Length: 369
Image (cartoon, rainbow, N blue to C red; front, top):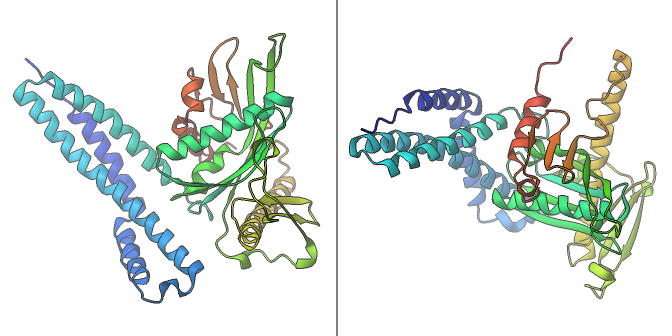
């Protein structure tokens, strides 16, 4: 006789879910949706496209947040019904479906719980991610492209909106760098734990001797600023160059000088954009990313000053935060959180949630005296 008892598991999930709701404040989310919907329905909304985009994006994010919460609530109720049905009908197939749904709900509630930890000033904003090939020659350029695909697959699996803003291709294989935007609720807070140096160890496909090769790539994550006025950059502090966009192998993909490169003279920061067809649009996009980087640099300098005054020498983020080992064994390990998996292929295909959740929890851990 079938006796499927998941009552204690379901009760534990409900308890965690209720704790999350007390932090999220669902009524405030609904109130935001009502307010933003009224703004979105205004007949003159698109008279100011930038403001309209801000309203519609905020509305979409809040609706997505509410839909996620309501979906989990329904699924918990449905799971109890499914367990009852499986026991009543002595249906092994329904019992197995209930067990699978329990595991799925544990993951969904776990992710929602992690989101409640994202309470930083810019955590709710879209993210701009830049990947740069580091030491390791052709292997490093190939690794950078592997990381780009990994993050794009992760975003695709979550149905997040992604725009590749700029790509600089390497001559032999892979990329020198790439910048993309992820527009999703809490994108910056979520992806910010991915910032740092990533290391790949494998048998190099570019080495005729078949030797093991170690290569590196850097990942930078910054919040996308909403308004250009948030960081004031004098025109005299910038050099703006225009050039033609190009694709793999140097093939021209544009017949006009629409791509833009902005150099911030005081710091040497450089931002290139070639995603848009218009030079004006590329310049605006590059300026927004530059402003975000300057803001991040300012905060890092402030944090460094505080650490120096406190006598703290060791940085929170080491030079190497994650290793991807393909030879002589298979493993991906985060060196900060100790989270590891033995399936690099799945990770490179976008299975990052475990690493991201562990990173967010690690960042919010109590600091030992």
